[in-house]
Image 1 (cartoon, helix red, strand yellow):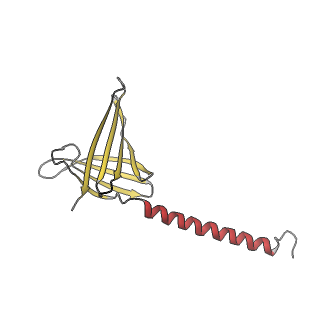
Image 2 (cartoon, rainbow, N blue to C red):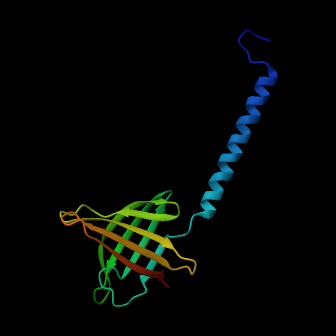
Image 3 (cartoon, helix red, strand yellow):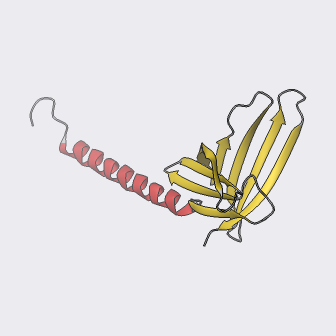
Length: 141
């Protein structure tokens, strides 16, 4: 055996441990992907009278979430802008853009019936009062 070379048994154990870690990492990634709900797609507000958030489009890239919002307009809905956030424990969390009067966070989650539940939590920077808005969406098409 050359000077400085690892004994054959040590090399074998390093190879076995590396293989187990690699397989474990792949398995974990597959389990996480399978457990993550499919939020991506086009969603329509269940309440047709809502005008400020009539439709949304969600796109995912890993843990990043992009939310395109559409307001009710005629003859087709209008683009109201894009928000970005992340997926945390199967819930899309999006901090709303800075506002001089209030701050807010939006959370999107699938319920057991397959509808997308959207909860907007707002807090006044002036009075500290809070407000919660709940919407429910179904897949378009």
